[in-house]
Length: 620
Image (tube, rainbow, N blue to C red; front, side):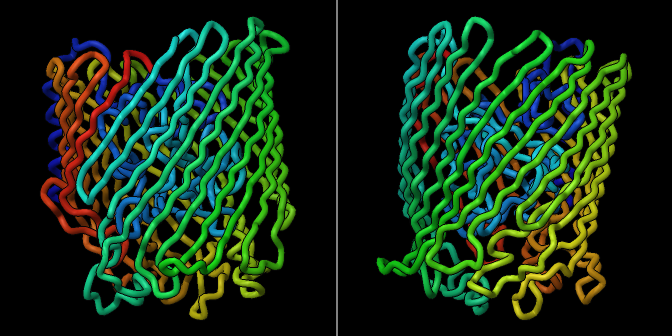
């Protein structure tokens, strides 16, 4: 693993050293001029963000040929994932070493995730319905409230463009493990309006999710069933909007995914899932210096469990939300944001909960100012949770621009995570209603540079988490843990003689500090070192590329007695434009057929081949 990380760093550094200083604008896979909204809830460029941000564009998605959202996120700075046995299986994401419930997922501005378990179902989001993804690392509770301890990931679905004309699209993929996936869409727009509708489906026989013959299989996988665990889903997305001559704008989005997954289990071995997200937004400019936005959204989540074909039970949740945000230009290069948020959560299950509803209201403020070479961002928020009372969070960030595109930044922020319904009530009467919210404080220092032919960045941070929720020896949730997480993230992007190169390195030290028998141990499922290198080249109508991922070992238990070995994987890809509208794509995933696990005793696919035919006229 150490050799892999060193090789990736040396390769990227040598390419940067050889690059022609006069080569025009830039730089690997990252567009630093891309406009983002997640870091500040206002429109800024990646280059202007004082937070650590990664943007995955639709062009990146087409180039990388992923099957899932996790294919795109794996190996990004500060990101590690745990998957329970292949395509469509439950996937947990750990941002900067924090818990899987400490990363907020938004889809088109709407919170997504189960209000019972507190987890976001990344595996249920169809990748072909995505326009782009913004990954913001570091605490963001001062803008978004609970859950944003590790960071925020926002997924934006496809949409039409005003004046874009009628744009049909179609793709069909087939490959290993009897995979078959199809997607069709239609988008368009005129001078004022835009719309998009997409429909898709996917089926695969899958792999055996649990490792066969494992003596410890009951502990890890509940039961060992030596069979393939298939997955099928179908999805539908729609969006549209209208912009008036005075700048007022109304837009809406809707995404629905129905899935069915097989897995290994003693009481249940099949599930049917529903994930639905809907949102609407209206903005208007009462004056040249004031923009006011009203928003509303809803996320539905349902999980039905079966043993073979026998129904076992269901858990469903609904989250409604509304907001009012006002962006006021108080002086040149100075923006004040004032807003109110409301959120209502509800549980619907055949398992009894002592309480099934709770609300949260909040007010927040943010100031952004630029003074010559210096930039300042200040934000504060007060949340009132109907169950856990008031919580105040805040953040401060400062940046200074030197010559030659070099910038230094420093930030400090606090965040919190409220216990979930499962923590407090599940199963009936067995949770811990006395649980307190988890609280964190984080400090970060960053240095980055953008030149005409390459860019690089490094961020170092430390996060303390108090009142961490963990299970005691009787599997009873308690506020018994503390954690200290230290990390360093690096990135380097180069455009060298037509080759696009983007590399990422992460060093992480997520340690338990509860003072008990596990004091000083590493937190579960977090590798200390990860690396990713993307290399791509266009040769006329042909495209070639490769992605190398590496991760060091992690541990499957709090006492660090059961290691999960590290791994390296290599993905190869190629594409050919048959015409300007038609393209053939081929991808060889895990090309060297490495056996590896991201969660103890849960298999990952071996060498897999996929072939795609895509119809996508000129502009999306």
